Amino acid sequence: MKLHEYQSKRVFARYGVPIPQGDVATTPEEARRIAARLGKRGVIKSQVLVGGRGKAGGIRLANTPDEAEDIADQILGMNIKGLTVKKVLVDEAAAIATEIYLGIVIDRAQHQPVMMASSEGGVEIEEVARIDTLKQREISLAIVAVPRGAAQTTVDSLVAAGVKGILNFAPCKLRAPRRVKVITLDIAMELARLPYYMPRAEQVAET
Image: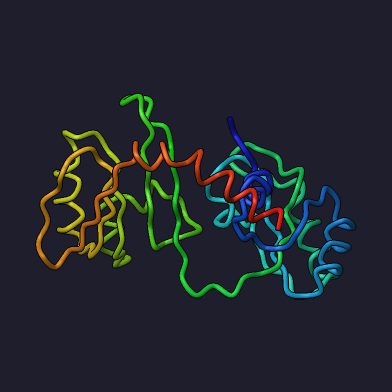
C-alpha cells in the first residue's frame, strides 16, 4: 500500500494524532482558497510518491493566498523523479522547534521491515543513514531495527559516528559505551498492544 502525505495525515487524525490544518488542491485557484481559509502562513507541498520533494522544489512556503496560488501554479505539473504532480497539500506552516524524521521501509532482501530515524528531517533518509553523513551532520539519535546478526555492527558504526542515543528494536541486547544511552523495546510486544491503544485513540478523537 502506498499513501500520499495527505492520505497518511488523515489516518493519523482518525486516531487522535495532531496534524496541521490544511487541504488538498488540484488547481492554483483551489490552493488560494485554502490558504485564505487558513488565514496564516502556509506551505505548499507536492503530492507524489517519491522522496526528495523538497530538494526538487516541490515544497515551498507561502506568506499570502496570492503567493500560495502562484507557487501552486509552479508546482502543479512539475516532474519529480518521473512523476507528474497533480495535487498539492496546502497546510498551515509549523513553527518547528525540533524535527525528527521517522520511516519504516521494507527490506526485501531480509524479508522484514526496517525502521530508520534521524534528527535531520526533510531529506532522503537513505542518504542520512550513511556513516559519513552522520558524522558531518552531528546526528545524535539513531534507531536500530535490523536483523540480530547485523545489530551490534550497526551500533558500533553509529557510536563511532558520534551518535549519543540509540533506540533498539533489534531482537537482542546491544553493547555501547556508557556515554551512549541505549533504550531497548520489544517491538512484538508493542505491536501486540496496538489493538488496545487504537480504540482508545478513536474515543479521544470523537471527544
